[in-house]
Figure 1: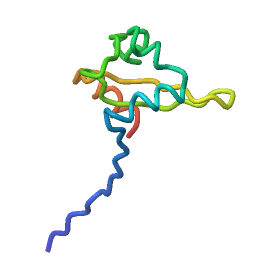
Figure 2 (figure 1 turned 120 degrees about the vertical axis):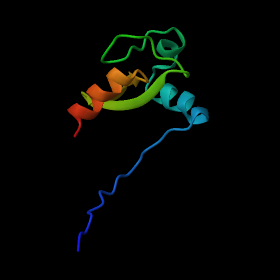
Figure 3 (figure 1 turned 45 degrees about the vertical axis):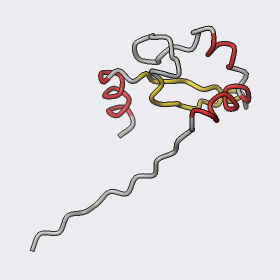
Length: 83
């Protein structure tokens, strides 16, 4: 008999309607609107249309959101780094 092990994954998500509030909480809304938030892998400006992954980063007690775009190469880099 062959038994397959299943990996359980928890998905954390932010709805589009909640993204603005999250950006306000981290004082990054103006940066987002101005195209100043870039993909951490390719440097593309992040928008509502290409945002794929939000990576919270805490430094000196302040939370900052870093992002990954929806480019398959960037997603592969993120997955390989976080496995």
